Figure 1 (tube, rainbow, N blue to C red):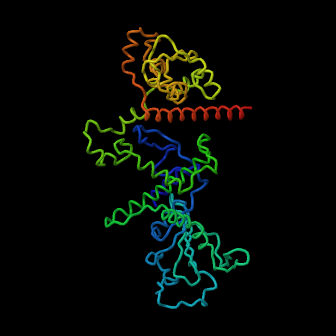
Figure 2: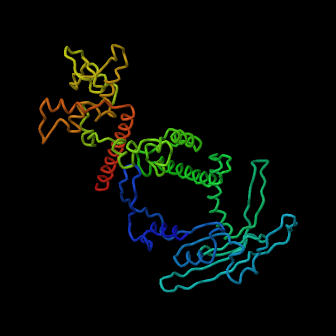
Length: 446
């Protein structure tokens, strides 16, 4: 509770915690190991109110919350009553064999109030104790949580139309605050049950691990929904009818988990898997050197991606214009995509590219890839021009030097093309964000 309050204090507008006197927090990228700072998001206009169960109740916790300006409502354990109050409240545990009367009740809830004055740098606060129901043995402890306390009746309904019936339950403000907030925990318990992430085992330590994993799945789904709304980034917007349900999300997540290879060493603990320890030590990847292979330096930037508009085909009409100029030349040259010798050349781009595979039609795969945006930066000419291997001190290298440089070029694999396509998609998303920022800025200036 202490750590939670210190973390929440940094999110209050105009306030910082005692241990974290700064407006940014340092985070570490699990992929490349680099650290970066992100601003702390200010969410609250004042220190928030927290609802918890009786595991967190007690004199030390309640005093700490009040002295630091927080509010709290929680059920009170039978062995943690404030001094001198236990005999005034219902605290006897009801035995299941006893018949408890449904008629006798208190006309008002039992309550106690203690107002604590400010002292030194500690803030003033108000402690409260309220009986949960008029005849129940549960009680609610609170700090800075109630403005008033009365007994009222809350209507309940079930059914519909002719089958609809109503009844009333006794309620008070303390009980209402607790039940209206604590249902979030009940909802999470229900979603944990829906994950079905369990199996029967004598190894008792599997149970808390699976429970924590289920909570992680729920948190990931909540993050997915927040990103899909498009408020964090417009490029992440997904229409509500196209968003995955919790069931679809778990299926997709299961596929990704089954396809992941711990030899990639992206996450903590991957180096302990048997699949990793069976490898030779010199062949194992660390999280730092893995980034260079996972995201190769192709020299592609947002600027040269924009400048490659003549080559990249976005529409079918643009593609047709390039394909209409592909002719068979008398002199062969290496294909820009696969590197094999071919006679076909796109006269618009002035580059050789394959249309056939060993004289068999393959759908002009190389020609389509070369004109695709997702392949920009992986071709032979990109290796020389975009990556800069064919230039030195602003001047083009000699043919012999270029020939030696091209010996180190290799055609991109399917996995490399998929990674590069994701990189190009991120560049495009960055372009969209910059354009939207420019548009909004010009609108504000106007």
